[in-house]
Image (tube, rainbow, N blue to C red; front, side, top):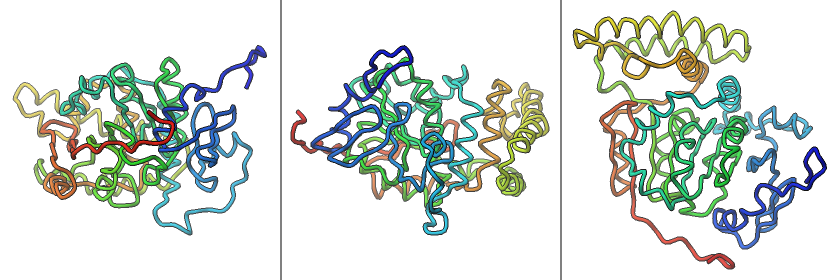
Length: 355
């Protein structure tokens, strides 16, 4: 592999063979400029992203990069593959690829129930990482990061981590990861599982094999809110389902502006007006969005209204995960509901050639 100046450039994963061996539970990993081979199984590497998806599940942009024909569709043959979800999130993060200042405050909200200091020597996995906006605040606080996304957002994440050498990047399906059991010390998946075409709580249970501690955020069923919030949600859901059918970028852009100025900002303004009377908590959207930049609000509007699949859960349903985990800790603070699942750690298997 060579740079534009003609100088030899070492493949990104050249010095990460041991990490890859341990991650996959493999005996041998070969690395070259175009891919890696794990016990003989080859995976392409594009811009330092290891492609775990089979070719029929590659997003359109990757096909174009690799000059690969569309091939057969998996939509008709499998009901747990959602190409529109893959497309929507790829488009979202290509439009909003940067880490914003307010992301740091949101990171602290999500990780309020996590001992971040205890991650110093840990391998941390971010599933459905998007642009890596949460891992960004962990990259100097842990030993190693594993970032995985189903969409082309993973390439935006790679760009955001150009100054980090402890990150591994994967384009893959979190339900079909070829990694060993307990490949991570800590895993998190925030705002991802409720968009899958399979049951989100069952996916949390399935992830129990991956790490002894898992932080999850799932949309709440407004179970701690007054009834009129649920009525408003019903109306919003109808709008979302209608908008999610379009892939026209101009319509999507126009809709984000209309909803931002027609819904979000007026509600934030109402909350500000009612705040002196202590009533702002009764205004939908206010708790999370007041003080946010216009660009941050638009990004969430895009996220919220162009995704066909949206599952929501009550607190008691989340506590039902106690049938799989030793402890479930649900944060009492927004965003609702984010929660930590813990089980007893299991010693990693010893692999030949791995200390």
